[in-house]
Image (cartoon, rainbow, N blue to C red; front, side, top):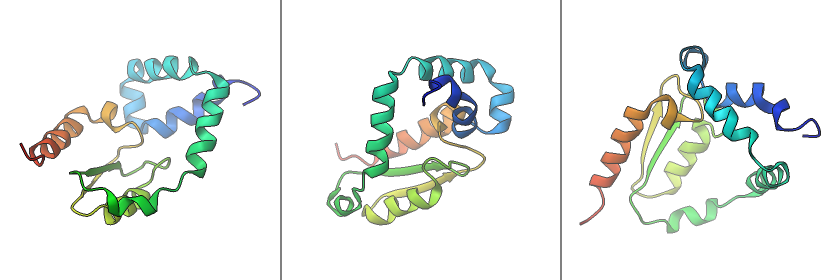
Length: 126
């Protein structure tokens, strides 16, 4: 990161969004780039290191709340195999893979994510 966050933009944008979405929604991609570039470089680096070291799999069986695990089929930052492991570790969770989606699924497929959230909310006891 000696070259700054700008040097990561080409990698990040392909990680965040699929090719078709990037081509059709340049405005959304550009807004995400603007937000990304406002990160504090030191804090961003520390967050990346922390996430790389975090292994909370042993805590998964203790999670008792309704849980939906939703992942983009093409997400290589948090791939389907990782999401499936979460699903297997959290009793009663649901699991869905979103076709042709990458990491920022709420921006790529907002209606699908809204429906998944509504289904999750419906599982919460009143």
